[in-house]
Image (cartoon, rainbow, N blue to C red; front, side, top):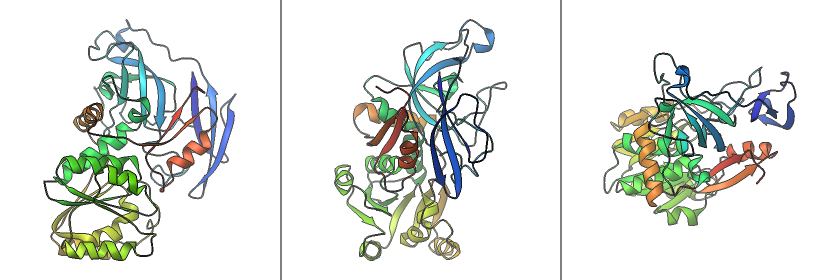
Amino acid sequence: MRVLVAGGGTSVPPANCEHLADIDLHGERVRFGLVERADTAFDATADHNRAYVLVEVLLFSLGEGVPGTPESGPATSRWVEFGSDFVANVLAVGSAVTTMAPGDRVVPVLRWPPVRPDPVSAMENPRRASRQVQRLHHAQLLRLPPGIEDAEAACLSTAGATAYAMVRRAAVEPGDSVLVTESGSATSLAAVQAARHAGGQVYTLSHGNAADAMLEKLGVVQSFSLTEPDGPAELAKLARQRRGFDVIIDPAWGSYFRTAAKLLGFSGRYVAGLGPVTKDGAADWTTAAAGLVARNACFAGQRLGGREDLATAVEDLRTGRLQMPVGAQFRGADVGPFVLSSLDSHRNGAVTYAFTEE
């Protein structure tokens, strides 16, 4: 099987590692390589495999980042697998597994904080989507129905589940005005649609030039960019006219909080995610936080979603209520462009990687 690995700039790569890319990420030099390893052994009749599933990853996305990004800490001194989201084929199942069978497609169920599926299993949320063949507890997987494209499914575990969880946490109601930040990311695009399904009037905010035509197609009333000359002033004017937004969904709150918090109305709800930090990462947020207190606002954090959120996103994707735009797809040796595109705050849609060249 193939395994993509990443390590710090001065660390020693594994034996027989094919070097693919060197990338500077927030001051950390991270190297990427491809290693061929023996397939994971799996005896479906063995008792220690009774609740486990063997899967082959078809496509994966970074989800919660790679070594060297602010969310994951400094680049590791040892070479590790990375990525949290994938879509995979089931190769084999243990004797006690009844919810899936060989040939099914599955996606991982990510949770925060991590929990054990049972008293003896490993912790959940393993960041090893870049391993082509994996043995996982059945509780960490959700079977996909027919009719869902692999590229759409490859980002559902983080983007889809988190978006639906944030909208649920915000208790969006019909008629609520909702501002969604980082409007080009897969999580935000899913949140736009989930908020619309709940009856919200949705507006978006970004640092770059998000695809306005795509946002309009998804039902966004108006989109704003902080880099446009009149963007911040027009957004502030709209917020004053509406006496503030009822809800702010902020998947990248480390980049938008200081700006967005000023736009929330009295008794509004602000739900923050754990997206990548960009422009305002080192900002002093004391004044913005004090403004939330003065508005009697509710502030909640939501990192990842649960199985129910993921299942709802999957069902909406199956029925066409949810679209997961895919901005770019990479294969084979294109690991460097895949990582850089995934971390680009100006991207529009999901970014995926496939092990095969086809």
